[in-house]
Every structure is written in structure tokens, then in C-alpha cells.
Image 1 (tube, one colour):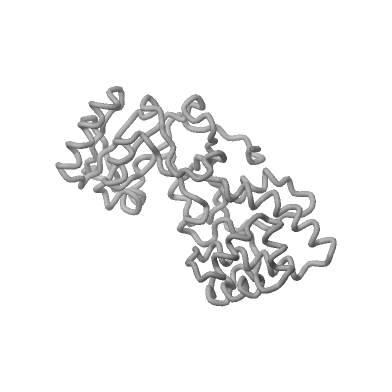
Image 2: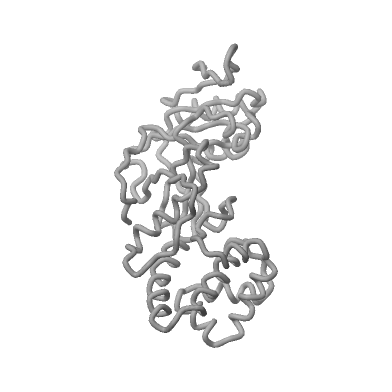
Length: 286
């Protein structure tokens, strides 16, 4: 899979924020959980700019009705089948609950397809045949370039009761996956054209976010070969540091230390403390 146009250097360490339960599970199993793109919490992700798709996000009932109408036409079912996503339309027809990001995106694709002339339809289908299967196969795990972002500790580490695990990014530890930095922009990604490189566009689609999220300093670990799996084992030697949250319970702290001693003897443990003067955390080693 190609990288984005720009050249970037992956930091030596990247940091994943956890609540206490999920962090202890990761330490116990030596596995990281990877998400499907449909599970993202930002409705603008994986959604190229079209006014119609935006309208579908805002009106989920209308989006669902559009997909139902598509399933009632031969052209609609042929369109979904050509993209390899007929099962999504069938699931909606059966009344199964799917994320609005999936329903709105399918409705938006169908609207664009119906609005195109015959040549544009061929080009559109040609591109989507490449994008959709790859996008559906992508599993991602989110990291940050910094282990001490106060908002991240509140939003993703259970209000400072969780932890941060810091991993070595050496390629030998992540053979089938690639790290990509997020690209924070004010404008959304536009739809591809005939000249668009499909692989490069797919990476751009996976890594474009609003500047409102810039504080996260996010890097995504993308695996294209996990298929139905959602958990990826990691080499215990890849875990280099563990940061314990300011308000982690004594019970959970003891369990983290026990797991470190048992499974990750070379990993260092740091414990969060309030700075006496500034709005920041300090992390003396345990």
C-alpha cells in the first residue's frame, strides 16, 4: 500500500491511551484491539465532501429510505454487487442496525452514481471497485505522538484512572502494518477524479481529519490483512513504557505492576503527578 505524497519519519515511540480495564486486558493478552473504519467516532471520517452525503448524515431515516429504494431496483442491486457490498444493502433491507456512517455513505454513493452520465458511471464504478474492498479490509489502531496530553488522559484514559502504553515503532515489530500520521485540515477531502491514484487516495481518506482533532497528535497503525480478526498480538519487547494515571486505583496499579514484572520485565513504569506550577503532568519512574 502506498504512502501519502509527503515524506514523514515515524517517531521511535508511539503511545496508546487506555482506560484501566482495556489497558489491563492488553497487558494480560499482549494484544491490541483494531477497529473497523465504520466504528470511528467522527462522522466526517471516510466521508469525502458531497453536499448530499452531508445531508444523509443529518437525516439517517432519509438515508435508510434511499438505500431501501436502491435495493428495490435492478440497477441499485447491480451497483452494490459490483462494489462487493450487496450485503450492506441486504442488512438494511432486513432492518438490521448499521452505523449511520455506513448507511449515509452508501446512500451518498448511490446518489452520485445515479446523477452521473454513462461515462462517469463507468469511471465511478471502476474507482469504487478498488476503494470499497480495501477500505472494508482496513483495520486501524490509534496512537498519539505524546503520552502527556491532558485532554487525551481525560477523554481516552478514563479521566486519568487509566494508563498509556508506549510502543517501539520499529518495523520488525509490526510486519504487516504501517504507521501513518493524521493529516489535520480545515477542508474535507474531495471525491476522486479519473487521474486520482486509488491507493494514495485511500490512505488520504483514512488519515484526513478536522483541525479540531489536532491536539490528539494521532498516528494510525493500519493493517490490511487482519480480515475478520480485531485483535493483533504484539511482541512483548515492543512495549517500552507504561504510564499510570493520576487517579488509578491501588488495585489496578498493583495489577499493572504485577503484569509488567511477569510479562514485560524491560518496560519502565512511570506514575503521573500534578506539576506544582503549570497545567501539566510529570511522570517520575516507579
